[in-house]
Image (cartoon, rainbow over all chains, first blue to last red; front, side, top):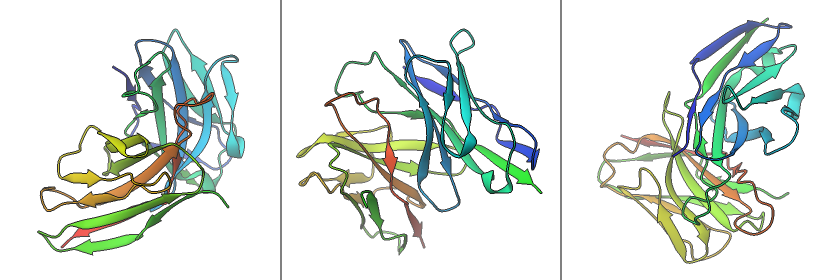
Length: 119
Length: 116
């Protein structure tokens, strides 16, 4: 079974300060990890993913995430937050070793973290 | 432009009525999914389909039905048996089983259903 935890319901940060959104995961095998962002009454937009290779993944809009296997974490980061980064952020995981067609492609999502960036 | 189109954006329903949410994609993706989003609960999988004329129940399928008669289309019907249907519904697709697919999902803009 796979699961994702986003321990913070909301993160508040001032514009220009670093932004971190936390995510931890649990899978039986190797993880495929994703971050998505959602603006009010909109669908989810893909930010970045970790599949294999370099632990630091760079994505859209200046976001990056660091995969830490020992801590089973995949925290999302941005060096300097913008007011326009205020949104709901979702972490998602899939077990790459799941081989059955029944499980393939099904992502497990965290509950989401609301990011509020103040001017 | 390729993408996923959901309609209607907003829908109001009286109790006891069935409603159907449309989802169309022109990405040539094999797999399609329906998720339900409630505040503070993340996304929960309702139904998914990896190929035409085949679909499987997700985690919360009770009170919902789907069909997959065409690759491009995956409509969701919210039936009167769904006890708490007011929610935001998201349709998604992925490339499918072929190729180097890592399971990344592409989402539509969502449909907000309110039961009056």
